[in-house]
Image (cartoon, rainbow, N blue to C red; front, side):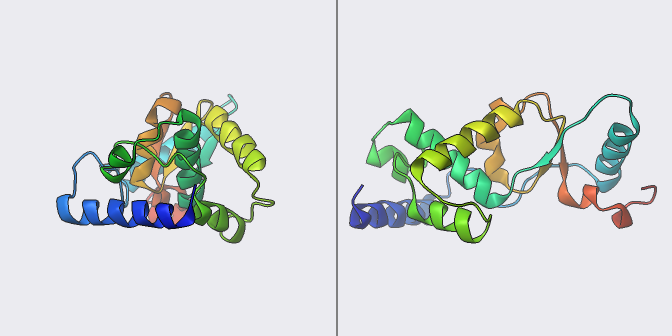
Amino acid sequence: MNNVLQKILNLSRSEYYRIFKPSYVFTGKPRLGLNIEYGNRLVREALLGEEPVMIARMGTTECGTVLNYLGVREGKRNPWNYIRWKQQAWWWNGTAKRYMQTGAGFFPTTDANLVKFCELMLADLQLTDILVTLTYAEEYLKDYFVQAKRITLPSMEPYFSINP
């Protein structure tokens, strides 16, 4: 994908969101109505239980990269739908690659390695028992973690809880 075309599409997408603020776009912090005590209790019970448990957190960078992968994998090439937030990018976003390396410490950020990473993340999400939610963009992935109970990040920090 041509870098100039990518920049034009990304700028157009940003402007579309700024002007129209479509309600179907999942951006920003999660809008979970969960309290800290609820999340802390879930974690405590899971850790004290007899069964193995997977408590996972997907960072903002990793989530963005997985969403980018889904767009690449789907392969739909409709610029108008991309601008209106109806689909993900169908090319590997250079910003996502750069953030994976500098922010998440993932390297080398080749297309093949990113595909392996994203497929592993999607498979692991299906095994997650408790998902610590950081970004509202995780809503795009909710079909991959249907069994997981979701909590907010402060729920993982015992000093915020009355009964850790």
